[in-house]
Image 1 (cartoon, rainbow, N blue to C red):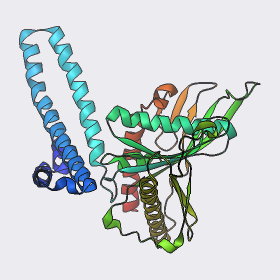
Image 2 (cartoon, rainbow, N blue to C red):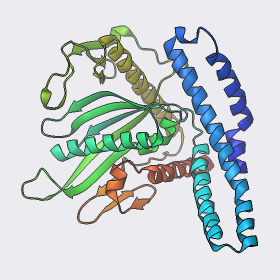
Image 3 (tube, one colour):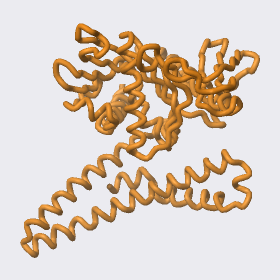
Length: 356
């Protein structure tokens, strides 16, 4: 716990809180709504982090008292309660320790998540939709706000693709270990012969772009199309051309937003996603240049997790070897074990590369 407190730097958190409290008290704060939301969000997050560290430190200090009282009174129930609290505190410290491992350049950012159906036809589209629900449920469990920017529905079932934001500090660093190809094995509900089907869906996680990132976009290099939003089955859910699709011509990157708001708001959201994709592309190019200077470099490999529903029940991460025997719980958003294992695995890989 002491090492966690040193890494978290409680003095800096308190100093940052004082700065944001002063900004939040400014009478003209809400003249700029975006800035006001950013200030209040960061203030709330920092206050929450400080409260979590202090609460956990208090629980650790209380443990010795609980054990002493149980020992002095010879109370088996009190001893069992103390043992349970000790296990809970150990788990909470381990979870907080994982957060201290998120120290890369963009880890503290909010996240934009893209999910797309890959090989497997209608099963892949259905799997992509289940993955989207899994991440939204995970965010809901943690109290993280989300916003769906765009959903492209498949004809028979599921989705072709979807883009949504997870609006919480460190969402990018946390979810970035989920990037890659996910594989589902099951008896297909769409096959009238009841055959086993393997399908794939891709997950891309991007950091939300901030003004300091300086990703310049030439307006002349954009093609902007507007159209009516649509829902499942192609039914119109909007009577105006408010949905926006932006194509960045030099890279052929296409982004869209149709979350039933005004065209201006949809365009702003689509531009934010485009900025994030261009930033990720720039980072990949820079990393490729650095890897070229090394003797080969390393790769995570693209396929990262398998979800097997038949002939047995298992979800297994192919990088960390972390596995559970309850796929439904995972698909309902119980992802923390996989995410924590992924963050530790990544940190160890980075350490090994640094020593190479």
